[in-house]
Image (cartoon, rainbow, N blue to C red; front, side, top):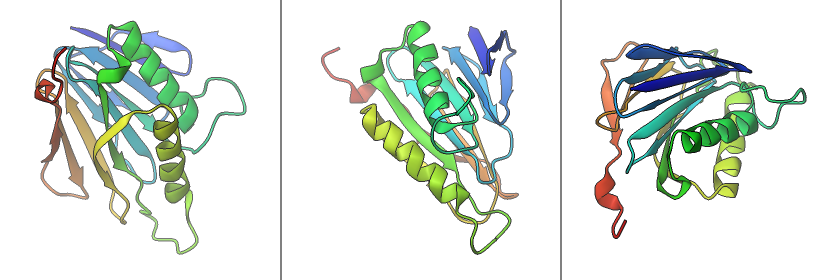
Length: 178
């Protein structure tokens, strides 16, 4: 089992269940849980190589690219760093699939469009990188959490105070001829 988390330039080893805060990236291999802290307008990008069981989670707060270097609060930086870290652990970019969770207007402000801007930014980056989005739970007004089980490839989530529900299961059956 291998876990790394990146908060700006800081890297440290983690435990079996790992909580990923705003502006952080966590990656792991083969076993363990990666769990987001509560998501309001933030979006979690969950990436998983279905063949190697290498996965990660980026907790993103802002659209676009950081004006100050490699700040993982920003979509462009976080997604690039997440994919790079997965590749460093042995993932193959062509096998990486993506799930997205979050992007709610939890304050219910009529003119608050930061979540929408963030979602658009993330989709533009994913399209540019030619990554595949397999499932999502975005928008609305309730906070969410997201969890990736590295051993099974199961992505689960909560909305508000709901029980945890399965969103998606990454599976290698989709890759033929590898």
